[in-house]
Image (cartoon, rainbow, N blue to C red; front, side):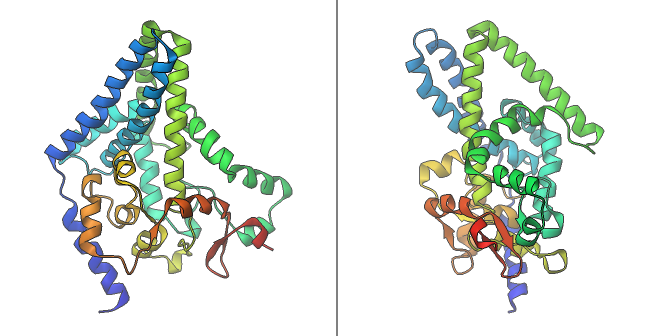
Length: 329
């Protein structure tokens, strides 16, 4: 069997795991969405007693925020529930909880899945990545902007909060009527939620709690997204040489996480499987990975290696690898 035929076979085998389960999806709603709302109730009560009681709950809520976002993400792929209506309803609701307009984000994320690893289709739904040649021919101001944008401080501490709090409040250029409506309706629901919590606990406590949750969850989320596409051995090709299956299995990492972290992140560490077939719900990603037996094709990415990957900044097209700034010349 040829290399390409084998990879096509993997995709066909992966499709067997697309089965959405109403029971498993509903249980995740209970242990994620309901738990997140319960934590907000607990924080609203403890803040009247002491911030020392509230802050541990804030950290826990940030972890559950990530899990709620994975549910939102799966709904966007139409994989979480069996019906489109259920996916769209829960996608919108979890989008409000995670400050992300459902239909608008869904469109942008679909572009990401269709262009991952394609050098000719960068710029939408991905992390800004320049080739060595592009960087060396760029103006000093553009180089500086790129260095700032790729710094871990900006990527992990500034960009996530700006994205969730501000960027998602406005539709992107070229968004259709449906995407625009999702932005404004989400904003309206967020205004109602913020008003309610301001009445309950006050504006400043609400802002401190919500911004902290977004900052913590956003940092972890960006680390996950970044490290699973920007790592030693990553895949980037021009359109003529680009392959969906290669981009999935070579350009999307299998991030090896402890069981507790795997639960919080909704199995998104099996990112190679997710990109191989985005219709597989999060609760079936591990079983699909195990059934395909991809150990010889996909090397696990450790947490340490994923953190080291933040030093990789540019794509060296001549040698087919990500390199550091100092290796660019």
